[in-house]
Every structure is written in structure tokens, then in C-alpha cells.
Length: 346
Ligand code: PHE
Image 1 (cartoon, rainbow, N blue to C red):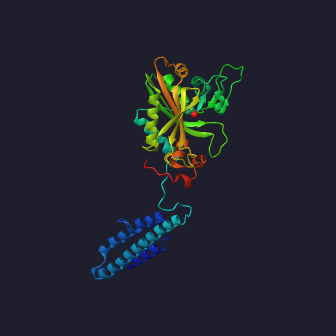
Image 2: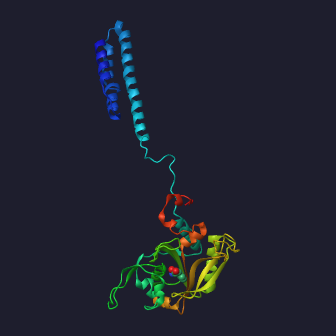
Image 3: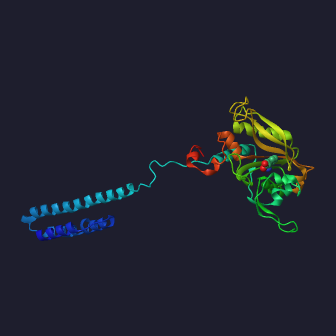
């Protein structure tokens, strides 16, 4: 019996264990219910009683030795795994910082929320559009100089003689979405269309060839300019604060008549004049007007029965006024040092 004990001892001692898998195999081989130690222990019953004390002691020592070897290996293997992960210096440090919403997304959501509170729904349309939806149905005459007001990225442009396919282009405003809504829906229509738009401009602090708009459209019987003004006043106060004043200056768009541009009172100086508002007390925010009857007719809406108003604003412009970040390019560079300053709860 003593022989068997020392044989098992030297066998267990010489086992080489390199990983968790081998350690588990070791445990099963020696320490489990059907393991070699239990098999040896079975023999203990046959040991003559005068030897039981000594053999029992030897068996206990062996069991302890094997158990200790197992415990020690278990500990060092876990440690080894730990250090291998700690040694990866490229891992981000703890606690991990959370991402944040892009300021354009934050402002976009805020604008949408404000108009949804007064019954507007959101409509979307394609960024790759045709001339018909971006210009023609919005009352831009073929030779009208207004067509040049917006420098357009063309994808395919038909030649003078070619009468078939329409020009394909990147939309220069989301008014094209409103054309699609008018063609499909019957009044009353109350919708806003947020989205990316494209204009062929040199990139600078004040201009970019891609930017974002939210345009709005409201068509029903008896919609008046007073409705437009009140809707925009509501928007301005929700967006820029309860004390905000608005003013409408006459302007021109082919698709609205009359047309206006809306300014809000400067929230930095409260209208007294500062370098943000260039000492005028006012900041330009959006374009608007009553939908031109030609546009309604071109989109199968009876201009004798219905009237409507429309407005459109640049999200970057609103963000600039809100955050006082006046270089447009920062909104497109996605520098984390810039983005992580905008924290929101949604
Ligand atoms: N579509 C105009 C633009 O892109 C904005 C606008 C929309 C103006 C609706 C008036 C009415 O600048």
C-alpha cells in the first residue's frame, strides 16, 4: 500500500500543466470521485487494522499534496491570464467614456420636436432627385435666372435637343420632398422635411457643399400669412427662449409669394447690438412665404380652394446661433474633442 502511495505521489508530481484545460484534466484524473486517489482509497478497507493509522496518515498527506498542487496552479494560471490582458497597452482605459450625439442631430431633433407639438408630421424623400421635383414644379421657369441661385451638383444633364430623360441631380433643398407630399396627399397637409442637401460651393467657415435643412409646409383652406407668422413665432420662442422677438423682411423665392426672411432678436445682447449680431440686434434664421399658386396647381392641389405657407431653415445655421460655434467646418470634421462637448439625455 505504501508503495502504491509513493507511486501515485511521484506520478502526480511529474504532471506538467500549462493551461486551464490541462488543470481540469489533472483534477479529474486525481481528485474526482472516480479519480486515482479515490481508487487508492478503496484499498484502504483491506489494510490490516494495526497499519490503518499510519497508512491513513500517509493517504491524508498525499491527498493534501495533490490538492495543494491543484490550488497553486489554479491561482497562477488565473494570474497569468490577468497579466496578459493588462499588458495590452492599446486597450482603452477604464472607465470607458460614453459617446455623445452630434450637435446637428441634437438641433435637428429639437426642431422636429417643436413642430410635432403643433401637429406637423415628418416626411422624407430621396437625396438624388430630378429637376422636376427640385425646380420645375416649384415654379422655376426653364430660363429663369432663379435657377442659377442655387449651384447644383448634376449627376446627368440632358442636352438641349434631348427631350426624354430628366436631369438627375443632388437636391439643393428639401422643398422637393414637399412636392412629393403634395402630389400624393390631399389637404390639410402639415409636414416638415428634414434632410441633407447639396450645393456646389467652396468650403469655408460660412459655407459648405453639404448641409442640413428642415423645411415645413402647411396647406388647408384659409391658411394666411398671420398663421405663418404665429407658427414661426412659436418656433422661435421654443427654440431660442421665451423672450425672443421675430421680424420678417421681404424677400424672393420662386415658389412663394409673398416671400420673407425671418430674423430673431440676438440672444447674446438681447437686441442691443454685439459682435455676434454685427451690432444689428438681429440674426437671420430662415426663409418663408405663402406657397405660390403655380406650385399648388403643378402639384395637383386646387389653388382656388387652398392656400398654404412654407418655410425652410439650415440646421447648421440654427446650431451656430444656439452654440455660438461659427465655423461650419467644425460640424463636419467629427473631431472628438469638439463632439464630446455636446451632451444630451436622449
Ligand atoms: N427652399 C429655400 C432654401 O433652400 C427655403 C425656403 C423654403 C424658403 C420654403 C421659402 C419657403 O433656401
